[in-house]
Image 1: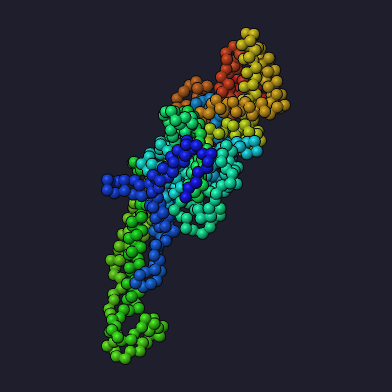
Image 2: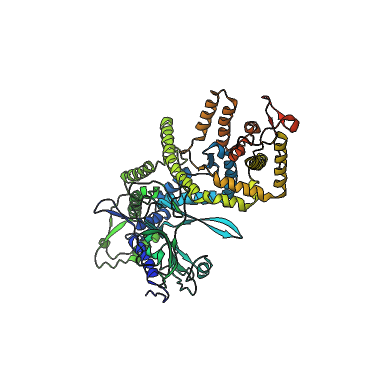
Amino acid sequence: METYSKEQNEFEVEAIQLVRDEVRKYQDGEWFITENVAIAIRPLIRLLRKNYWGVFDEELDPVTKKRKIWVPLTRLIVDSTRKLSDIDLKDLTFGALKKKGIGVVSIVRGFVRRWLRVNFFGEVLDESILQMCIDGTVVWKTYSVRENGKTVVKRKTVDILNVYLDPTANSIQEAQRFTERALMSPLEIEAMTGWKNTRDMKTASRLHRTEVDLKHVDNNGDFVDVYEMWGLAPMRLKEGKKEAKGVFNAHIVVSGIETGDVRVHVCEENTNKDKAGNIIKPYEEMRYLKVPNRWAGVGPAEMVMRLQEWINQIINLRIRKNTNASMGLFKIRAGANVTQQMLSNLVASGVIKLNDLADMESMRIDEAGESSYRDEDTAKDWAYKVTSTYDIARGETGGQATATASVIEDRNSKTAFTLVIESVGHMLNRWMDRQFLPHVPKMIKEAGEVTIFGDFDGIDNMRQSVVAHLAMEELERVYQETGYVPSEMEMQMAMQRAEQDLRKDNDIFIDMVEDVVVENLETIASFTNETTDSTVTVRNLLDMAGMIEDPEARNDFFTQAMDLMGLEIPESLRRGPVPTPAMPTDPMAMLAGGAPALPPEMGGVPTEQGVTTGAVTA
């Protein structure tokens, strides 16, 4: 029996009902193929997990009373697919969308790669790919919290049996609403910032973390069921006025639907936005194969689901028949006083006492024929073809296959799993772009100088760029206020003052970096070649550079090529003409191009073209 607090108003009761309706409506997640045929996604996921672990609903054979044998076809297919769909952190590349963003890419690349390594992202990715191959879909939740005065990004995998949304939605972001179920202890709920009604929570000891239907398991501890909904809700829940019209993007947290002590902890507007300013939910999904008009993906475990059932029947019928053929079946006359115990002893002793030889007669049982083995091979062959896990892809010999056939199988397998890798890569691109990169500028500033730049090359060049930027800011300010054009000597002195400020107060450097990153985060992160094939692009850039006579324009192509390869841009490519305050300089162009050139008498170094550089090491 559910109870409501006396303090709950009608709008909180409506919010509770909204969340409850979402859970009830999508309890099984039925996806209709025709008007008469539907697939219940939640029971399907349970079946796929049972197939991977090899679990029978009834373990004993009803005839022989022996345990049935589970053929590990699903596990073989899933594990082979996971191995062939692997993505490593080395596959992560960064590219600048604009020339002036190349300097920012160096900052972001170094910071993100270190964050991924420190947070064991490679291990997380391997686990998610395995789960995707079993369930067909994996959901990530990403959010930021404040810990010790710093922004910390949290990422967790949400069990697909704990999510509720329209099964025909194209994605979580496009779904009208998305609800997540989780278990939390009363202490965890009390510690949540901004949550209300967190005292004296009623707990239960038989709630299961995976899904609501597994309540009959042993005690897991005392927890509270918490449901978090993101999506459209009536405007009156936000305004607290009955006459309020329309809807808003809501974030509602309700607990106690399972324990009976129902409470509203959060009912607020969702203000999370992507770079384009669109409201987003803090979730991203990864699907093995996306099919039209169905949110849940299709994984290899589902592809071989019926074949798994068929091959189990083939194997266990053959075992039963061969066992009966070796043990023997007998016809026994009624009233012959032959017991089951006597028949069991026949196996050990080989003798059974009969009053009359006619009381028991042996029945002829033939062993399983060749057709049983052909059916088994056919089932396996279908499974390998539908999932593209050929022998050569699994690392096995091709048997009687010719060398040509093996090459064709290898090529087809790689082509099929390239699509799977791209599917994983697209999800990671979305996650990086929508959920992670927006937090990077603030995290870079809060992390500190050593943490930021300890893990990638080019720190000296970056320091020089920052010094040049600070000096140009000062000279530009003087020019705007007085109209005075400083001399080259005054430019050098301005750079020296900027260097001294940088040495004296490192916060200037950090503040400068944050501003640059925030204003120019035109960076794309890619785990797949679908967006940019680095090898082909670099080759094209170099070919185009060879057709251009202007050295400065040619250097632009070389700079882009070095950036795509993730290499440090050499100083020779950073040199450029001397900027003057009379010609206002874009700070980001300075960041990409390096320090301004200076004459030899002011410390510059002559080059072949007669241009000098005045790089200052901070």
